[in-house]
Length: 357
Image 1: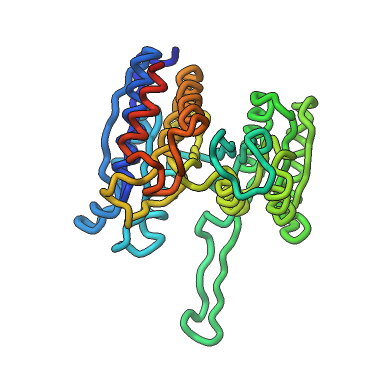
Image 2 (image 1 turned 120 degrees about the horizontal axis):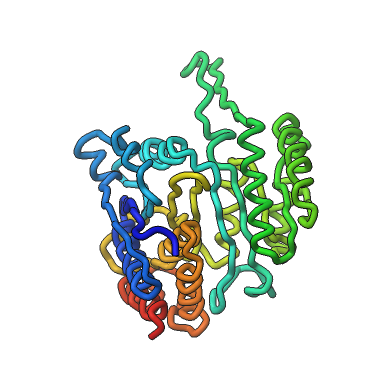
């Protein structure tokens, strides 16, 4: 048992966000009852609607409040009437950077009963994690234009990589590999044959930190080869660690191999601070209010949140409930409108299984 009461910030966000968060909270409350966990859920309305009404995305005062939370539970961000990038940068990235959530953790696991587009692959083949550096690289916003709007226009976008940033991400990945205790193999995904300076920093750090973990086997893979092997031989992987941009790309490919965005959850983690958990899919505005969207990714993100808070027994109960729902055929598909159940019914089902009924 961790804290007496967990203070959780809830950001439902846009589109289907409020619907899926509602089901996630439903499951968390049942897990709380079963495992004697208490929560203080604090709602925040940051997102597209608030921005359109007030012009405000995320005030600094809210960030100060976030720093006093135990975790943040996020629905989805993205509004059809707001230009792409405004909410993503002003809300998601701002939270990640301000709270120094330097790890993006993406479990890639094919649950029983879920279809994968990979031929002859099953749950025993697709079970690994991607550790993505989350606060450096090409996402720092360093760069600019010269002679913008002219035929001689130049656009510069710089990727920033620090020894500190690479080392703490790589060390987290080694620790995760040790904790998983499966293949005990950590693979560094990079493009060191072209991005030689970034690659050299990451590879040297990878080897040096690895000396502290002699039982962990080290692997190296260029990002293009990683993409091929994720499709051809996903069973080769245990944990992958990678710089920010590559991690952003390969985790979407990974999500498709585990059945799609409807099941894929992620964590933006500061191991010493406040972490944020979310489904990795978007706000799906065309499904808003129709009670047809799959909430499993959001429910799984809630389980990740509990695991990160140290409540591993409750987290495992949530994952087992999801696996029971898919493995026994209760949920026919992860696609919106084809689940055989409504969004609320899926939440009820998982909550029932978590409660042991």
